[in-house]
Amino acid sequence: MIESVFMNKIIHPEISDIIVLPNQIEAVKASSRKIIEAVQKNHEVSITYATGNTMIPVYAELAKAVKAKEVDFSNTKAFHLDEYYPYSPQGEFSFVRFLNEKVFIPLNIPESNRNLLDGTAKDGYNEAKRYDALVSRGIDIAILGIGPGEHIGFNERNTPFDSRTHLAQLSDETVYRDQVERGQDTPGKALTQGIGTILEAKSILMIAYGENKGKYLKNALYGEITPYSPASALRLVGDKVCIVIDKRAADILVD
Ligand code: F6R
Image: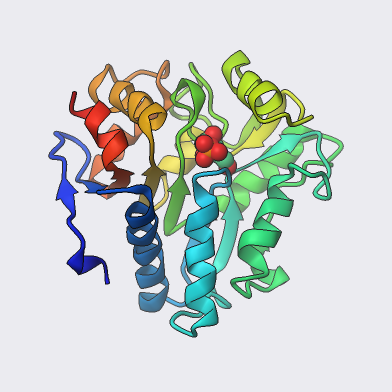
């Protein structure tokens, strides 16, 4: 039960809910609890799932809850945020593969309820258009992380706030993280839900822990609201945004 854990809030002029947990483990529990409660309330909820290291323990918590029969995701609709392009879903670093292994299979989400970006599509522009139409039917919760250059999804610096799902050129920072720091042989392009697409979700849950993420968030939450900081766009719809962070990120944020 998260009630027993020390939980602090940061008051922010635009973002309605910034929750600080003492450590990563508690931040993971608190954010997965939010997702579980949303599914318990509405069995047919539509969820956009980010991938990445931040999400691995969160999705593992969801899988535990499903195993314990606490929650049933089988009628929920799943969407993903982004996928390398061109890239095969069987590729080691494919986001489709990540979601299959960590979300769709453990949470028993049937194939008919999975809405995937096709990294093998011949025409990336048409694929983005096709996917945007699907997402535009309505997302209840968009789960987001934050990455280099304060990106959300693969919306890098200077992506317009009204952008729709598109084929994006990854920034040098993101390519460095992926290819050098993480040793991935992934391409420098990706299909991603646009910032405008993401902001249309009925609610947005961003999860971040650690000092680096605190630095990204500090710029995004307290700097200028500008396409130069893609995550700063969340402040335009702050009344439906919840950000869950750990103390290490929070210490940077309030410094
Ligand atoms: C992944 C995504 C990215 C990540 C971000 C943080 O689907 O859209 O925006 O959320 O790059 O990645 P991690 O969690 O690996 O640090």
